Length: 361
Image (cartoon, rainbow, N blue to C red):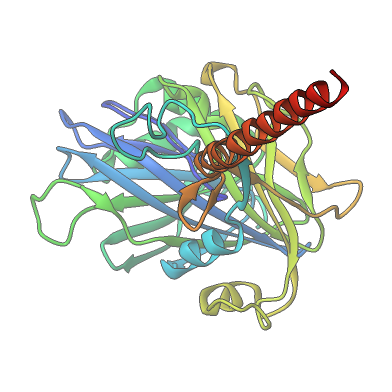
């Protein structure tokens, strides 16, 4: 899991998605079916790589993400997600059983499946465009804002219609002098709806603490599922549940991208080829309106390795034949062989006793 997986349904006017907010164009709908996030932190710099899978009828949409310091943005490598998926795949543990179950012969007709930056000065403008570039299908604007209303106006002037509730939700980030990455999502063919997996984006910013922005997810109207791949010096864990269920580690282990058996080209490029500790975390938010903070992550008490186990139940067989069938056949064979011998022995005993009685009579 280990993959990070973020699931949710997003409809007009705007709802949260993962560590940002999605805003479709007017009178349009867009949903994020899946968001996968990878976080890399070396104690000074944080990188977030995310990939969105979207659907809907919106020809364009805006995605807004708050960041604690000025960020650089570039396209990410889609191979990173498949590499981490392979590294963190669960361990398959096979458990055998003797007697047939409902999906086994003879109960089933055929075999069944098993169980299977610095703050702006006082004279700075309320919104400052600190950078803008075109990355593949994305129009990326990096903003510094000190007034949530001014941020809302800037986005509206650039084609984004922000609802009041999202402007309110952004205020804590403005108060903390955070900046924003505002991205216009648009397909390469003008007028074509946003559908399928978008090119991944890679954000990089200075940070002396590992933080994953989650506060905007409180705007979601459906339960949220958060999944994170975390690359750091030690095993990492959230400081708290921030309004959701208890976070759960699905994988923890030290990896060296240079010596991995599988291809880890994208991972080596992200981490600089240095050994790192990989932690995969999943968390459910049944009531996203209860989310009250961003995730602050810290080093766990120990770098204890862990891998999720998936149990697969299999019927005991020998040469493809169920062992219980062979056992019954063996029992029948023993019975067929033994009964005549017992009967023959009894007849001999009976004849012997008869002969003895005649001699003694």
